[in-house]
Amino acid sequence: MNKLKVVYLWLIRFLSILNLWQPRKKVVYLMSFDNNLDFIKQFAQQLSSRTRFVVLYRPETEAAATDLAAFGIETHQFTDGIRFVLDFVPLLMGARLIFCDNYYAFLGGFVHPKNMTIVQMWHANGAIKKFGWQDPTTDKRSDTDKKRFQEVYDHFDEYVVSSQAMGKVFERSYHEGADHIQLLGYPRSDQYLNPEWISSARQRIFRAAPELKSHRVILYAPTYRPDNSFKLPSGLGAALSADPNAIVVVKLHPVLRNRETAMQKIGNPRIKFYHELPTDDLLTVADTLVTDYSSVAFDFSLLPNANSMIFFMFDLDRYQRDPGIQDDYADWLPSKPLFTVSELKQAIINQEPTDFHAFNHHWNTYNDGQATKRVIDRYRNLLKK
Image (cartoon, rainbow, N blue to C red):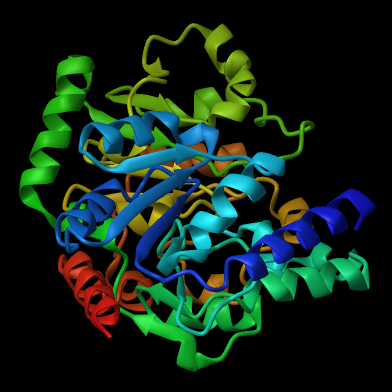
């Protein structure tokens, strides 16, 4: 760990100590993903008027923060740096309850008062990928880095999860005890079990892309890769569009959009790129999801329109080395992973339905449409203590 990072964490610790005296009456939500807005709004509505609710958001979620601000929620953008230490560490120290949707490195220097509860509301309700201590690259880090990682993990008092399987992932990944796990369900999952939300999402899609309405829709949504050398395999476009009656929607992470060029050059009118349409909405019109290690699989499997799911893991050997995938993945994936373009093409043609029952029982155990209510009830009651 470099000297600047050490100094930064010590500044956070110093400001934390200076603000230990504060009464803890705030609720703060740290947002680096934009996929839990409905929970944030509902929670804010049910708080006492005496409780200040603040959302601190990363720059990449500015659109979501604008939505929350229009709803009447106080929002502030933050990035790591001196301004964060001076402006937001004192604010955080006045919180009775802090929700996190990700790993936040600054917690490594944060002083955790006894009368503050920090809750990990992870940004997905299942995990194919490894993270934390399970990531194979973690072993290669310095002892100082490893100590800092665990200091961050140890700040989380509770983990909201949707299954015992995800609870075990956190126990292994963060070296935390089972007593920290709250089996409440993942609030965002409620929308996938809500017929009104599904109907509205489908209408939004069909207004923007009416050509999808009368076709089988194949959604290709692979996970994000940080490696700049990543590229899609040759022949992927032809394989995905092997069903002449289907329209293929390609939805890559924004960082990887330049990898679409090869498929765009094919000029196949049945391969579409709707960058402006959210993945959540697109899932509601998809018959087949083609993905790899993405948590979108756990969302799609809850939808009534989910007919089949294909796991196209063409770079499995490389991905197992960095960041790694769960060791028991072959035991619970709802369909056998495919590794070559020719296998993918045949699977697209065959259109074999996927049985999601065991998969959902394993990962979506507590996602029953009432997760938001359970989570709100628990943490409203905590605030009363």
